[in-house]
Image 1 (spheres, helix red, strand yellow):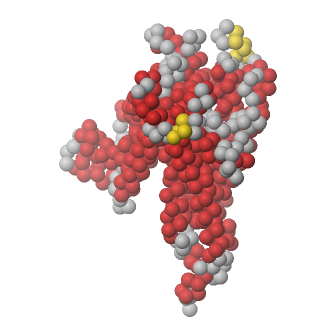
Image 2 (image 1 turned 180 degrees about the vertical axis):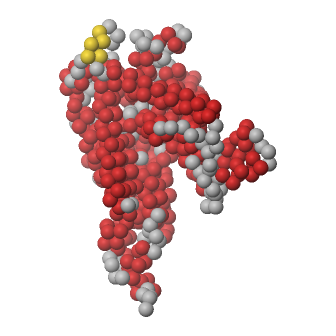
Length: 558
């Protein structure tokens, strides 16, 4: 006789421990309120004050009446647009080659394209100095133009945003429907017409989403313009100068709000485009069959190899320079640049602090992500509170790191804030890192949870199995791979982040990425390259460990 689920018993048990679930949900909502909403609200309010005196819109009027500030705003916008115009076609062709051609070694080319994710944004800027600076080996390639300025900023930002844009384009191009191509060929359409009438329209939302992501990353980055921007000012460097250089927190808040507005707009458009992209997906689509075309493969192969060589060259230049005694006059091998303890910048303690931050962010942050994603997506009841939580989980993606960091100063440094004791500690660095990179982590876990049958909790409860047992014995093992991906994502970003922590560290919690800034500012560019190499090597090692564990887990469960 088949087993019949007792629905009344199951519904009764679904309401088991409602206060426990309510407390956990309230904790999760409070975490986002205290970790993001309240600080951002205080930041916006601070832009209407000067020296604790309410001045209304005077700070904004002062900004738009100052030609220097307007120049920085204009620089930020046109650099963002130029990065979009360069990076999106570059990544589209690269992703097209990996998905719509018969190139060999696609896996290796894909790995090389993602290498910039493992390096701080400061690293490509340092490499460009060695390549195209006054003493650079390729400085004549710029035809007497200086790398210190918009040229260096644009090149560095294109390198840094490439993998982020590539992941979007790769996803968009990996889901072609072979039926459309067969229909186009049957109607006599040529290759060029098929490209413009079938291929491009099928990825139009991906292209637009990639453009918004590239623009947001370009206008909010701090590392590249700080290292190689020279006298070329952008909003991110202006915020740093106002807060650190002039201690003008009100104007820093004003600039942060101005940076926040285009980032929020880009985020809204990106979310809308993602929904449209999901809406056009057809489950009846046939896998795209790549036709044989040797000239196409040769041209795309040359292009991909060129991009891969540039990426390896940029990263390799910083690594090579870190072992050179005195560039470019003494090219002998040395390890003296790795003696960080004898230099200004934080020493090896800065690296250990970054390692602690990365480990805590991966473990604690990963645990929070798993808990919140499970509460928001799987458990019944408290629909209004769960809806509020789901909205909060998407908001961090729209907040630039510098804006979040500055808002933490206003919020946690208030004398009457009972949480003020975490200001200047490792705790606030972990909190800012997890909140800043939360959205991507959450969406990754939600995707994994959706692959688990929705009746899992129903069956467990009908069998009188506590939900906590179901969570640890079913949900966690089933989501082992996305949990590992989230932990690696938080680890790598904690090691490489600059903008989210540049205002929050103390002498005891200085980080390796901040140490690079300090050493570069002091003229110690070779030690800065050495610290960048250490960070990059650590992230590569973490990626290899993640790959080994994932491979072992996959082989064990297949």
